[in-house]
Structure formats: C-alpha cells, structure tokens
Length: 125
Image: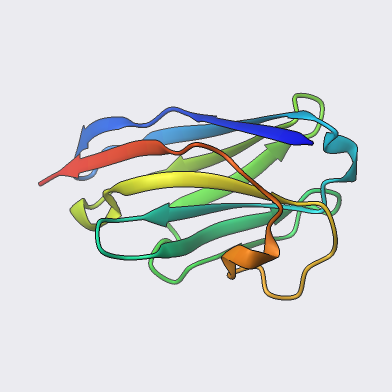
C-alpha cells in the first residue's frame, strides 16, 4: 500500500505562484510514475503533469506547459508541482497519483494505482 498526501493549495490572485507537494509513504520503492491531475465541478479528472520516478522524464498538458514544473525528491519520497503565472482557469482540486508499474497512457486516470485526497487551488481574477 502507498499513501499520498497533497499540500500547498490555497487562494491566490491571477499571476501569482503556488507550489504543491505530494508526500508518499508506504511501499514507495516500486513507484514508476507519479502525476498531477486536477478536477473542476462538472468535469472529470484532467491530466496536468507527470514524472518518471527513476529517470525523471516529464510531460505536461498543453494548458500548463511553460507555466508549471513537476519535480521529485527521491530521498523525501515527495513530488512537487511549481505553478507560476496562475490563471483563473487553473482553479481546481489538484490530486497526485502514483503508478506502481510501467504505463503507456500517463494521461489516463485508470493507469494509476494510488491517489491522494486532493488540495484546492483557487485563482481569483
């Protein structure tokens, strides 16, 4: 079992920055990929970014490319999402997810084995 806990959400103004953290505990040694998704009312989970836990490869949704940066600290078993130049449309509940096996479709929620409880990010205009 793996437990994921997000933190760092809050209320900010457009143009501000936030850094989200996702702390993993439990059987984390078999982690292959970690990712950030977000969800807004009336919409399903939207892929935001992912990082390969061993090689550090990253990918981003087009909507956040150039503004968000995903990173990981293996020693701390923690993934981060640095969010700059925030926009009102970034308002959502942000979730981290972990896959314990190699995956092909990293933008698909069913590829992931564990999820955090989510942290709210609200960006005012």
